[in-house]
Image 1 (tube, one colour):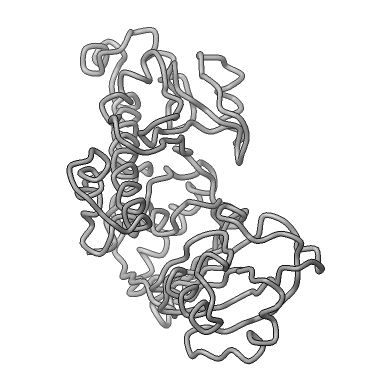
Image 2: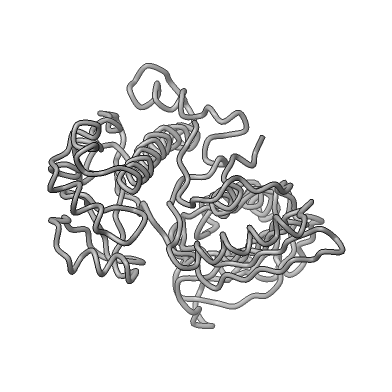
Length: 358
């Protein structure tokens, strides 16, 4: 899909390709491990393996089922990644003897509970961009300053949609009962890709509306956006590049309860101060939907499917952003931290102002 970007600069020329040398991820756990308990916690470094493939290797080595190994989140295959897994403590001796050229155990500790999906605070990234000239480096530095100040749209990255980028097509058929998939894990993955595709379309549309609101007068936009003039004027007054709309479902940030935006100045200020963030719909059952003007836009990207829905932050704020230009090597190195579920490649695309996986 062609999408809108949040930053105003022209596209920046550089080369990026995911590899263990140029793309490093370190998981930040949700809580401190207790150091005692029946669960063995391993901090593992892997490369050229997805988390699922890593789990499978360890499970086969121990002669156990994959589901007996706990993990907090899926990490990229084409990267050097560090993450925590949990096992029953009875496997400690066997794991002390475990050897694999693509998997290294960095440290171990113990905890009372198994690690579950979502039990992470975020991820710390190190990324190297190549073929960067001094002019591009200055543009990258300015883009990072803007990202540090205003944040980024929380698109799903291209990894979500498979190698060919079209997993959502089969996902839609599965979600509507028009196709079958025997493997429940694969089925869920494909349906999630369809939900993610609709979310990305909605978010791109919202960014397009933001751009129009910033570029045209309210009187010109009333018919174009099919919105009341008063609502457009309220949007134009907002300082943040992502404009809240009456009926948006917003959520306390970085976690908390959902509630409806009704145009309160206090909520606009809290968004600008990173206390709340708008959310977008992952269509499906049980999901809370937007209302009023926000729902008019959202319903274009909603669908009745046989899966549970949810809300996802539409906007996130990377933290601890650092950048270094190596003019001799024509490389630019980035470090930053993202909340769980957010994609580093989306941040890179925001800087590049173009797709990076082509």
